[in-house]
Length: 160
Image 1 (cartoon, rainbow, N blue to C red):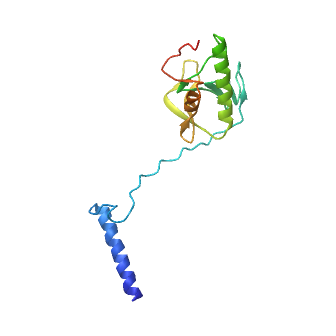
Image 2 (image 1 turned 120 degrees about the vertical axis):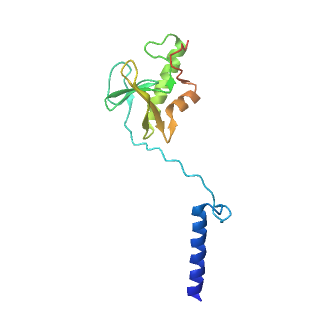
Image 3 (image 1 turned 180 degrees about the horizontal axis):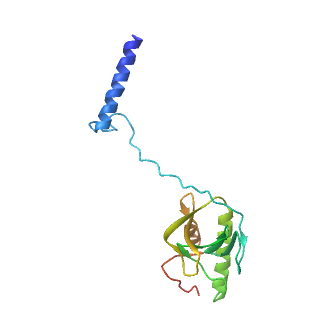
């Protein structure tokens, strides 16, 4: 009896599998949930302890709200524009620029991140252009959401 039951179950499974592979039985009708393939997780493998380097080069430090040094390379965050800090053009820009700079430093120090390439490798100043993400979410989104940055529109606009 047990052998007969095993043969029936295996036969039913094989038939259902064959029908699914040929597309003759919808998955939901076969009692199988139809699930979307999970998105590939972002691989956040970069990290360092970041300080500040407002004026000069450095190894792992934040210059301003959209520029930082990492492992000896200078990066410009490609998807945002933040207020200037050297020199700011008004008191409001100075305050926002300082807040954006401090926020970027905290975000970079909060954990591993990724640097995603865009259509251009560098800007006219030789900085590497990258979108900086953690878990697939851009730091630019955080800064824009907090009112410390604007989406990059292809050119700078005044903050004053």
